[in-house]
Length: 114
Image: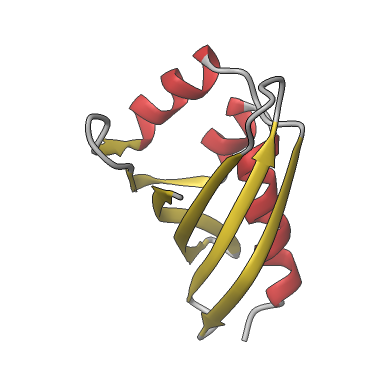
């Protein structure tokens, strides 16, 4: 079993940290799923999108659940994030991680705005 706290720290950092952090902690075959018109995007496209958008300053998770077997982990939660906009970003999310060379890498993320 993996240390659940480590995976949740990574998940929070994907919301708040730099595009470089995201690139270095994603699997090369990662797939990210947003609602249309964005849809499914690969890791490389996500990097370009992140570089062009302002990052959030604060994010809170609730209704959080997780499971892992030491090799793969799944997180499910509701996120509320705030940046320079007055309206928060609120979404239901699921993220998948895989252990690669001893480190957790995100392999999938699905986000549905609420």
